[in-house]
Amino acid sequence: MAGVTPQNAFETPGAGEEALGRHGLTRAATVFGSATMLSRLLGLARDILVASVFGTSLAWSAFALAFAIPNMFRRLFAEGALAGAFVPVFTEQLKTGGREPALRLARTVATAVGLVLLGIIVVAWLVFGVLDLLVHTEKVNLVARLGSIVIPYVFFICLAGFGMAVLNSFNHFAVPALSPALLNVVMICALLFAVPLFGTVPSTQIFGLALAVIVGGVVQLGVQVPVLGRFGFRFRPRLDLKSPQFRRVLALFLPGLVGLAVVQINVVVDYLLGYIISDHATSDLYYANRLVQLPLGIFGIAIATAALPTLSKLRAAGRMDAFKTTLSYSLRQTLAIAVPAAVGLIVLRGPVVRVIYEHGAFHAEATRIVSAVLMFYAFGLFAYATTHILVPAFLAMQDPKTPMRISLVTTGLNLALNLILGVALRMEARGFALATAISATCNLGLLATILRRRLGPIEGRGMLWSIGRIVLASAGMGGVVYGVRALLERSMPGHGTGDVFEQLLLVGGSAGAGLIAYVVFSHLVGSREVREVIRAYKRTTSG
Image (cartoon, rainbow, N blue to C red):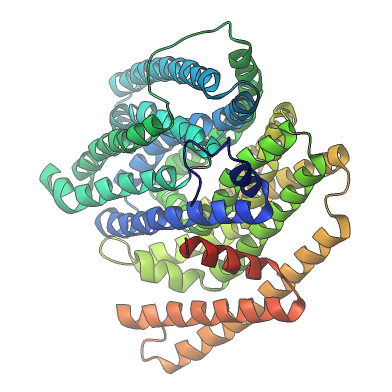
């Protein structure tokens, strides 16, 4: 954040007060979101190239499944349970014990995580090796060999994620948010230059991309090392297992790990079921999920990332009224982005998929299927985004067990729905996406109900009125987008499916009209969230 240096982030009262304020939270989220936007746009460019080269082929389905495994550990260790357990204890130690004891704790946690990750890599190599030796089918051999190549990525990306948690605790968000962009840069370069060197068919070319993942992981970790050094943290081995603070981190981490693990394992199970039932279902899930992750990552997860240190500091200071106010504010800001984004994706699902993916090996039938999957995923976008706020609230209160128990229940529901909708009713990828949306909504409902019982009303009627206004503004926006889309399609020679310029005009014109309509409708119904985001963005860009 502008004006907060490593030296004054925790010692200067003004910096601390800003970090705890509403505008400080939104500004931090805007900094993180702006950096994340660059990464997401590069990721979008990467996916355009992937779709053009690999389409929904078996090779890409195998890669998506293999890559989902290290990504599962990344979300567990780098972005989820570890950050949620470490940040509250680390920020409290900074406040009560000072910088040096806090940094010693960080080095102990980093060392322990590194050793666990090395163990995971060795076990994964053994499992993939046995599968490759004992099962002789193209599907199994391809995913086992790709998995063996990409699994070391977990070591680099999880330590990079831990570094991000340390930097976020010091109110430094820009470099951690930019580091994922480097993986996309490496993969884009690989798709353009390295992949063609691995042959002429997707089943061999895909190995060039797998190797690029490892290079990207090394770069992501490497770019954070000098920045961490400015704050006094260095990756030096230290293992003080008897430290009370380390044991507190561990006590928070293990229940949180179980809670998040069942959710992330379910993602892998979705991909695995898709891989079993067809050659392209896993690819369909991947492409649709990437589009849902675009608005979620740019702002939803940005707010959650900024909220965890803020909520942890408020809880440590005993300021529970401010805690509830900040939580309510975070939820409203998240919904103000997630709800209209979901409406826009549902209304424009076909044109969006077509203009982004339908090139080269990605054909019109793939567009039809991925569009349907995208619609079902989008139904749960508001739940995915707000869950990223509510779980950190429990973690900030040092209660990881409640989210764990809830996730166990809703993940069981998700698996049952997968089997019913995706397999029994033969909806395939569409069924898996709908199951995800339903279970995520149930997860959100249970989290919100229990949190309200713990904290009492969280701005009660004000919160409900804000949600109502956001829904009304989003509904009005959806009507405008639908009308503009229909008008443009009727006036175009190819009805929106012609050349790239025509498709871009259709999507850009409809989305632009929708954005203007959302701002106007938000003003008409008295929704203040959009104004707050715009003000925070102006303050951020003005320094």
